[in-house]
Length: 255
Figure 1: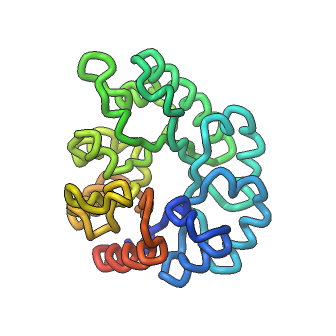
Figure 2: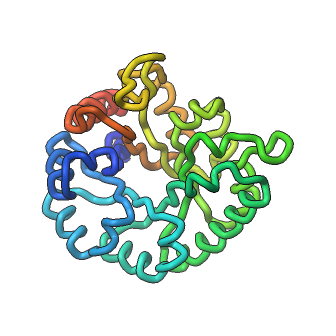
């Protein structure tokens, strides 16, 4: 597969541009052919599929909340089949639960494993997306992320590694990518601004404009098994600029 075809973008990054039609127009014009959706786009799957098809865009994946996965698994599976999604990620746990002790994270890993088994019967993969809080030790040296994957056992639970959040959590990203390469299927590609810069963007930067060595990290993610390299910026000051600059930078790396 051409490495450029691995590039996708999380549409949440572009929420300030307005409705999905406006977002997809900007994404397509920048050169992307894949997007990562969010749970609200699965509520009217036929309409979402039509919007994607009209622009020659296909979904790499979608984020879906834990609450929705619990409450509407069959509806989610049906929506995925309509849109053409074969990879879901549970993006986060509620803020008030992020400081929980080890038993919480083991229970979460077990529940996600059961869900992954259920979605696998529909030929849909389910994975977990990390932030920084999962890097806190919860049981001796084991982090919350370790406990999730340990409890998931031999289930087909996958992983979308948010590399910049791994760095903010104090981890050495390449070591974790290697450790969990059997689960890694995607990486969030975003950058961290130099200290004191881009405060209005919560310290994030367009890919290639920050402190992370994405030339090196691109290859580390791909070598560890990341099929999808998904651009993300949590709070871009100029979303349209971010869309273009990130694609231009990554397409040069991937070429």
